[in-house]
Amino acid sequence: MKFDELRALAHNIADSLASGIGLMVGVYELDVFGDASRSPSGFIEVNFLEGSIFDGCPSPQLTHAVALYGQALPGLCDRHQVSPSAFRELKARYNAKNWRFLVTIEDCNGRRSTDEYEGIPGRRVRELDPLGRVRTNRHPVKPRQ
Image 1 (tube, rainbow, N blue to C red):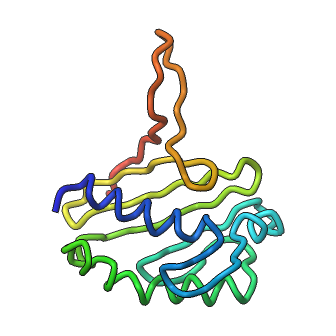
Image 2 (cartoon, helix red, strand yellow):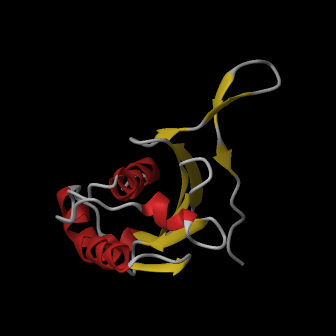
């Protein structure tokens, strides 16, 4: 499995939760950004591999939905012909201030990536570089040691 395919799969699951509809798991009317705004830190961090929220103050409905996403991940991986064990890490951080979310993945070989998306549907954040060219905003992630 190519790393970019894993990134695309990670974006799809994180964007599904951000959309507030949750068609992937049959849960409707979620508000992850609203829950993030009620958290003291202003964000919610989700671990899709475990189906858990490890930072922020989620509503019971969001907690239940994230658990369902964790259970649905193997089926999504099967449909894309990916082993769930290809992911060592699959997390998303939803920021209430600007409706952005960061998706961090690490594959089984230790390759890591963090991409930033904004809006609904989640689109890559683009910025101008010093030469005036439009570039994708990628966040450097240090390898684990």
